[in-house]
Image (tube, rainbow, N blue to C red; front, side, top):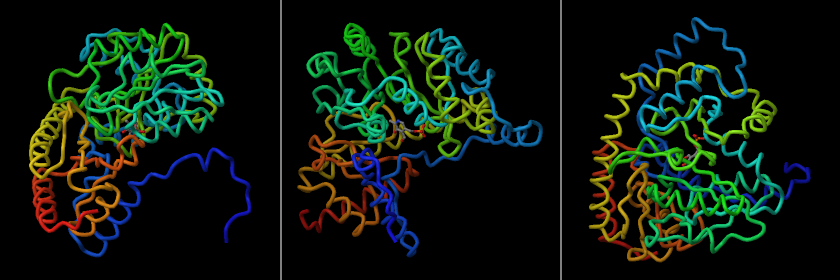
Length: 393
Ligand SMILES: Cc1ncc(COP(=O)(O)O)c(C=O)c1O
């Protein structure tokens, strides 16, 4: 029986995650015994590195797993601070590091701290859908700015200037991006930081795919500004999605408000995950992760030319993350129907563009290459076969 409770308006404003339809259908096919290749899911297929598991086992045996400080255990905040120094040569004091329950909690905390009803926040269209929903949960509005290959699917200083109005409070960037894998060059980031600062707005930079950059060295917005909220996570590069651990670096002066919100909303991030994550920065773990990164790179280098060969347009080679945002307009008129049709006929699951915004969404699909190399080769073969006998969508 349906409940009679009155629902808050914000719930109906939050869009469904369309990929779940594809995911549920993929799971159902797998349960029926079909060999389904899952390229719709934004989750590394690697297990948590062994040293991290060992640290968790030791913590389970040896330490009481009570609540921790709301901002995270000091050792982990220090380790993250040292990671910025050694990997990026940037000085980020541990006092600015806030450990959170996944980067999702970090994004929620920032939105709770900064936004009121009807405030506007600039985001790129396409972009990761949940970030828009965190904004909406605060009854503020994510304003999607259409971006395409000409700006490498990212906002620019000019676009921010053009779309900023008296209600705009912030710009939220993601680099490398989900769904496009596109990066923001440091000089562009610096210009955007200046434009936002001049308008007394906030810059939020989601760097959750930072560890997975394939061409050239990874970087951080913290090298060009200490005024931004920079979000990161143990989910992707560190292969710890289910541990629900992330972090953010906040500008000096924001710690007190973030701490107050974190105490009230979450008490603390998961204690076991925090103890385990201390092992993430050990040489042994980083070697495992760098090897896995090289496997992600090889998968990208397999898929980009193979998908182009099939008729997908990929104007910008994704520089990071594990996604390819492909223009499917030569192959189908409606990418949602195309994804459903391909899943039914090939048992390969990938995501329709409508999950990431509205701009040319029905002409795009997202492939996640979080599956073994041989499975990706097979996915390409299956799609090729199906396209040869295609019924246009
Ligand atoms: C761009 C982006 N930001 C944030 C998240 C949230 O990740 P988590 O809460 O696991 O850190 C995701 C997850 O896919 C993502 O793609």
